Length: 272
Image 1 (tube, rainbow, N blue to C red):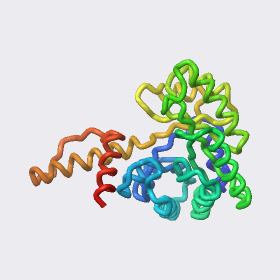
Image 2: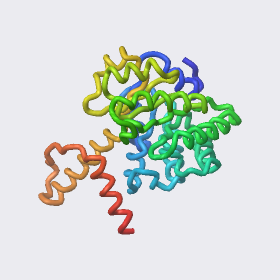
Image 3: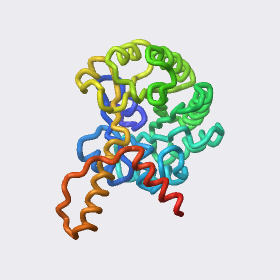
């Protein structure tokens, strides 16, 4: 495998299944590395929560870059960063943010269509690819398609919409296709067969087991914000138990829910 982090990260998507235990700071990245992670990837939600902001492009972009820089400085593994929708629709601004991330050592990004149009994401991908080429970095641009996550098409029509978007994102310069919410084995197989990009899915209840995902041709499995949800849920339960009893024998706590965590951070932001 190439020793260049950017090419190394690309190579990890070629065979088998790359599992990414998404991190949010140097400490969680170090734990992922010690656990045997072959690469590092941030969760946008987890990074935002760690800074006291809700998910959804609410985190000031300079904090995203600073977090990436600190993770990269303390780890030798390839690093991919979730930049949500690019923190805006201005193409120059989006490309500049991607460039700032590359400068600090990032070799992969996630960028999503979300509630926006596929045309807009194509423009963002193309703008980022131009900057990466100028820097001679083989940036892995993982295009996140939210057709399933947001229910953008009726059941039975979602695969076709994903395939149509995947073709456009690949032409614009994407390196991978991330379809969170895609779970049905038959639909996963149809997407794998119909796209030219490595397929990334998110670990969610109802997803086929790892061995089956490998057989279906999935190339990347992301934990998303789940690890951070577990951590924050434990911290809240432990803290509440200590404040109520003075004891350190807190019982096991359930993970916090995504919406619950976002609400906590929204409340904190509103109080500032």
